[in-house]
Length: 460
Image 1 (cartoon, rainbow, N blue to C red):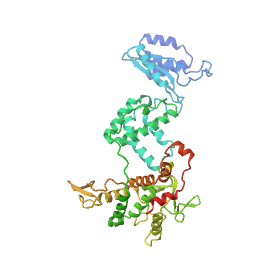
Image 2 (tube, rainbow, N blue to C red):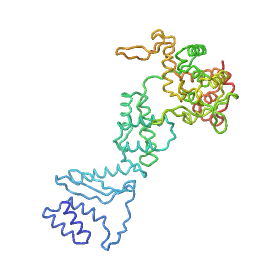
Image 3 (spheres, rainbow, N blue to C red):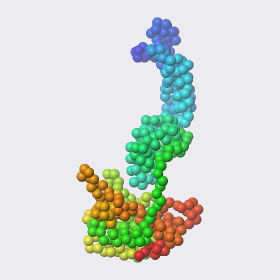
Image 4 (cartoon, one colour):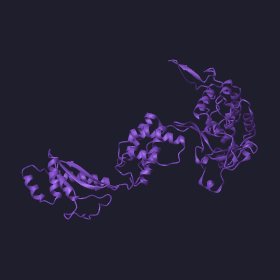
């Protein structure tokens, strides 16, 4: 069959009378309608008889040429047409049905879907979701290391398995709802919310590229969290004093070198990663930690980077996280003591690992704090923080009076103390490095302003 087509094409290209040959061969059953269609498609692409280009302009983007039909050996009819996709490539689009009319209708439906929306960039409506995911992850977003790690993991473990082989044009709000509900049931509401954030960002890129015209994620109404959020809980003044005593009197806490770290977080409201990245030195010619002035420029956080290990990321968790805060005098004296210690490792870090002097991992420190807090004043676990279970394993003990406290509770406590002292939401946000309380305050009030009054309130 291929030799027959090749020979016929040579005749067509050389200008011989192929029509008579086609009719004669077809009468003998040697020349099928499928071969005719192949010949027709080929002849449409040939130059004129004189050898010069025919000068036919290319198909406009999103349009098709003449529909051709071929009867298959099994009696089915295939309708085919050249279609110029929105990436500029001309592709052969075909549909097969039991009759010529049915094949043509199916082809028209396919062309309608293919045209709207089309996409004028690398992405089109026919692109796979896996392709969109790769493009989204490869784009520049300005994400922090932790955010990028989370999104890449979510795309790999949640988004691709659920959507990867679907085309962009096949994604509807219903598709998104069903997939997110399944993710929530299997991996929890948190995983589903992160997956939704990834999907929304992916479709924002697809819209910008012209591949789609709307974001189906925004119209998806899946409820991903049916449990009521717990009200923020902070330590009272009495609780704060008692907890500080427990940390400073605990041999295990001293061994882990966490009492001073807890003091620092309660004094400044810093995130645990920001506190672990506290270091001496300068930025833009000014000291990061000015003990004489009692100020700290929060401009970095401790993160773990794949294949690199722990690093000081020269940016905070959010853009609003960069700030200069006033440090209470008791915290200033604590840092002076640590820096002057003869046992201090040779490092610019204020809270390095006790032995090696390297940067601590916030996850590991949170685990240490968790076990200490679970064990404080807990009779159920004899103040160990864990309890044995069948099989020789140990699990967390949550029956202690301090089990509800986390390192983030220290930030909530600082916010509560400042609020009780009459500070405005803007001042509290500046102290903690939170996002803007409102657009008006953000536009008309300065940011990163040192408040000595905050240091006075948080002092001991």
